[in-house]
Image 1 (cartoon, helix red, strand yellow):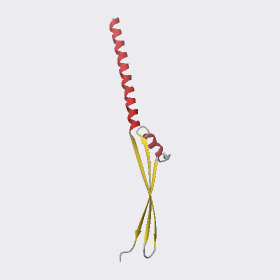
Image 2 (tube, helix red, strand yellow):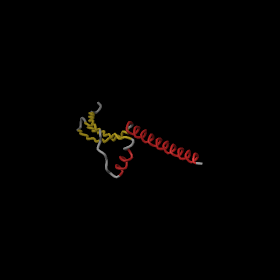
Image 3 (cartoon, one colour):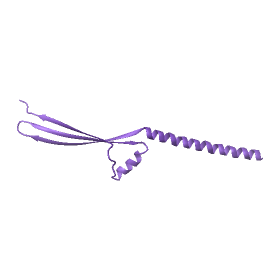
Length: 106
């Protein structure tokens, strides 16, 4: 009878060890995956000014592209904070200026 009880206790310990090892492995795989793969969030802001006279017109277009790089693990927190209005500063920002010169057709 004590042999059966000892076997049950040993099987229970093995099962607990296996479950703990599986949980730790899953957490490590998720952490590695979340650290290696990132999400890029882009936002474009445009603004234009036009100057003209009787013979020609100039259109000045400013485009600012802002980007934020977050990991999968950070994304839910970043989305929640943005929903509350606490927007993260951009990790990358670029500005472009386009000038279009228009003249009448003769």
